[in-house]
Image 1 (cartoon, rainbow over the protein chains, first blue to last red):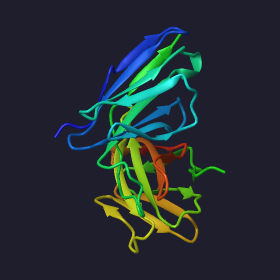
Image 2: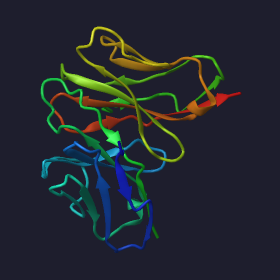
Image 3: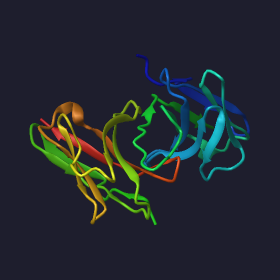
Length: 118
Length: 114
């Protein structure tokens, strides 16, 4: 079975531009999460979507937005790019989006999109 | 306070030896899950092992085992019989029972020496 796929692999933009990153989850998974990983740090949570609804949002400005489509794929949009937005953007899919009493729901990550803002 | 703390920025291990990567966590939830991921230089995060807060036994997956000490809030990863391909960044992560996101530590860079 195919894993999580992301496109594009690499992207170079200039300050002030807009970018759209795409993610396709593992077949059968209904939840997609987005993370930003700055060089030398661990991933930071941006969004989680489940069944096309936003289920969680991290501490990121409104320039960051996302959506999930009926086929469960997702887009992450970033407006008015800043130099500090340069990072690896990771998408993760899981089968459910509910936290429940005990979350055993493992997130499986894609290869990431490396964004460079000049 | 940091949810996940990894105090070893870098570790070295001889090939075929065992190595322990440290992870401590902070949560007030009774229900939570702990995860370890491997990140090679290519960037993809590879899931290794999971431990639930209610699991009585330490998790094992092949050469990976998790030394779970609930009272100390630690979840150390043990890699047995290290291989050259184990050289990578290793991240500890937690998902709280009441939350939707994973919290990651800053990672440990493991280098396996031939």
